[in-house]
Image (cartoon, rainbow, N blue to C red; front, side, top):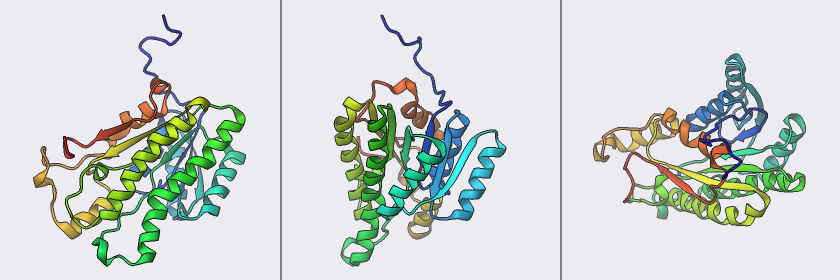
Length: 258
């Protein structure tokens, strides 16, 4: 017997506050609109304030709710300030999507220390600190929550194409997901991750301009459309995944190692 409705597949996020980092471009832009369409009040964050305002206006025009707040995910003070402002303005953040990331795009032996620190700061330190800021408020108010970290199939598969540190940080995101899931399970905070393959985005456009068409080596010879991540994102953010934590879902069209 179960108290959950059958099938337990609700994606309704009405009344919940969701915060998305790196929301002004690529996958983050799609994630923000998808969560808003499911009923969440979405706090859209990124560095480019003009793009944040545009995205928030798009969401509002479509009937959703959005609050734009500028964020530098590499800055610990900015992270703490943004989560505090989001909480004060919109209520406790119950859903966090750690999406912001950068590609190093250089051979490891050619990277200067500043670039190393930047990639580590944005891709790993930032999501870790953001998760903590959100989780400690959930714990204090005894509120269940969902954290979804965006890793990459590059965490599992690296072919020497000049982004070694990116691959390392995304593998770190996987382990962070697994460990924080255990840490906060008693607090009813589910921590999961998505490991996308190659999807069409601004970041991917930059990679393609450097490397040429990489799709010929893919099993289906194509890039993903960000819309193909909607169902996975909603599943991990919604009541349907209540018993799922510490899991990484690969959405890569067969591109990664098997």
